[in-house]
Image 1 (tube, rainbow over the protein chains, first blue to last red):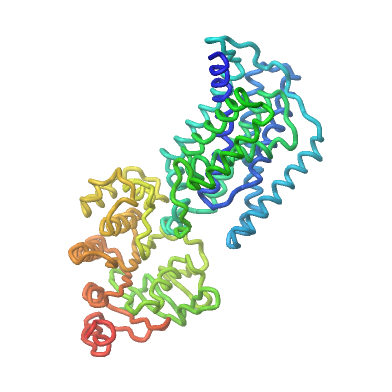
Image 2: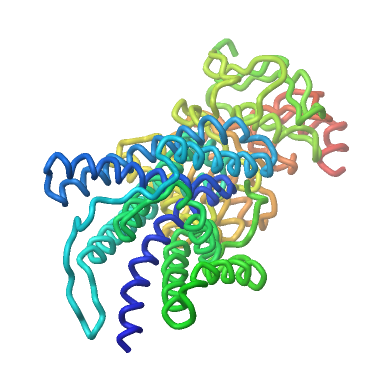
Length: 300
Length: 240
């Protein structure tokens, strides 16, 4: 029972982070039918930007929450700009080419960004300033650290914020309209390029926040941390039904839970395997995912 | 008529890849008119409308709106200038609600009160839409979708409305209702209408003038009544 509770707490923490990254995959796919393989690298770049900013501010003697808050905002802005630049320079010129060309350039971009991180930040782990949020408490034998509370809190705020943006605001309506019919959205006066750019920016900002939180949670970041996490988040997006925002949130949580419980009850050595098993299983048995919309590209 | 045309096409050509879809099309539409473009499947009617809306880049000629060239501009800038299209197949946003679809029609507008006013106007014209306003667009029937598509276009307060096959696939009663509304927005709101139809009889009866398109060329233009009386037209397009 104690193990169960403990893993439940850990699963929620990790699942929320996966959900944040999964949203970037699913939103970009929803709008331009591209699996943005470079998304994991944006996550890693966010983790690095976070450690750079937080370390500097901690050294200046600012209180931890100020450091975290300011770093989150600045790094999210940085990643949003980075993703918009990638979209403008690499994906946009290929808008009318075959989907395969864009997919391959996304793979190329992933390698480019990862190597860029390696060259500028080095190949070794970079540690987050220790003990930013100390302590924790116990419920029913499960340890909940304040760090976990902070992470889950930030995740919930971001997820609610995104949901409001997409489903309640006019810009959100325009995003959904563009995803559903690009020609028609142009005919009502929506600038598709601007909406696409914004979608990349929003996805990147969420991934960045996830990168910083993973860095704080595990204590360090590494130049290649975007790859495995990216594939897991992608699995989460597919599990939820790619293109579906609620699905991505749900998928992230499920993948996080499964991974944590499998690590706890089966084997922690193989914890990474389960996300891939789910990915293969979903693609094989229910390719549209839990909340999947029809796989339908006649409208594009 | 000596006034300036609201829309003028001068020798416009357009192509899909290497296939020329329309060749040297010239036509004029004057403010307040209803002009129909009739022709068989594949004659280039929809292509003409997509060229006017700047969705399809033209390969030759000029398109003037209010006397100003618009060919080559971005399509999303046109609704704000009063040029709006209801495309073939209606193209409702299937997973937006009726209300959201209408709101997207007014996307470029910021005047909340005006938008609300116009939405109520649309609900007056099409009461069924008000009943269904929280339903997803994709769940509506064909007739309701056509009403929604027209309502969405009206939300932009158009001065020139391009309608592509508004009668396609609809029951005769619904078609009558749609055409009544077309006349109403033309007469009481002063919206100029370009109507593309395979149902030539219906279209010409609702129009002042008509153009006949055949394999990408304008082969005839005349007053609608004259076209309706023309034996060649009657034979080729009115099923006699």
